[in-house]
Amino acid sequence: MVIQWFPGHMAKATREVKEKLKLVDIVFELVDARCPLSSHNMYLDEVVKDKKKIIIFNKIDLCDRAETAKWKNYFENKGYTVVYTDAKNSNNLNKVIDKAKEELAEKIARQVAKGIKPRAIRSMVIGVPNVGKSTFINKLIKKNIANTANKPGVTKKQQWLKLNKDIELLDTPGILMPKFDNQEIGKKLSLIGSIKDDITPLDDVSLYLIELLKENYLENLNNLYKINVNSDDENVFIMEKVAEKRFKKIGGDYDYDSTIKLLIQDFRTQKFGLITLDNYNFLLENEEQNEN
Ligand code: G4P
Image (tube, rainbow, N blue to C red; front, side, top):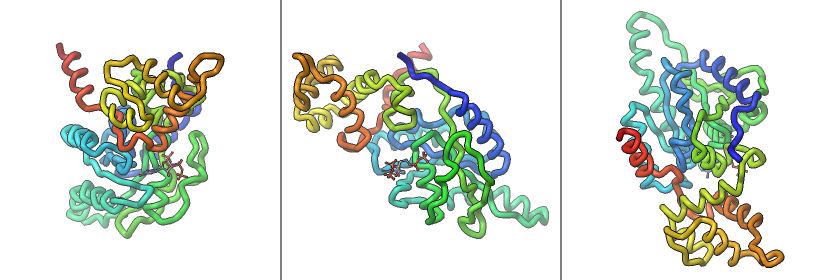
């Protein structure tokens, strides 16, 4: 079973985002700091084109900082401005506003030179589901506002929220699904809650999680379940070790269903500690292979 993609309402949401984009000077794309590449929407680059764009690595409190820092470099080398935030705890949100002003300073200076009185900068938040868009908006304006219409396909009258005298923010975030042809990306998006569980093969997702953990965070995996597996052990064998520790056998067989749910839940509730799912070396190896 593969992850089914792009249902009709998501196509509609994409159209809505394109419409909203026309209204703004700058876009804040939120990605999940645990998988900045997989949760980044490359398709958005085509749509946004001439707009300024800041990539916000949100949920920075949950990631493996050393690994995520490599992704910050990666995006900066491609010409993006990157800001780290922890929207839940309101960390670093003002930095985003400062960066937006910096990005548009030249344009504003040009307008002033022509004798045009610049209006406030108009911005909007965009990103895949569950990266923290509503939280980001609510914390930035210190109110609860970005919930009501935060559903794909649901429209309402747009309002501009004043962040300060120089910058305004659209009150509803733009929800986009990432374009991907790679099931591994889909599985990561499932782990971070961007794709609904009912369209996801959770058995595959949990085995994939084991794969990532055994390769990059073996100690975290062994410590959490008090097991002693190696990175060359089979994923299913590791799953059975976890099952053995946590659940009674059913009719002489491992309780795979409960173990699958447990693994995914433990990732989503940060039981493995600070984890970054997008492994930078893996990307480099792939790029090298593609070049050869
Ligand atoms: P969305 O609009 O992009 O879909 O995301 P939303 O703001 O609804 O946030 C999704 C979940 O991520 C929420 O948790 C939210 O609290 C959490 N979140 C947002 N930003 C951060 C962050 O920087 N760090 C951490 N650790 N979490 C963040 P939830 O479990 O769905 O709800 P709740 O915990 O707020 O009740």
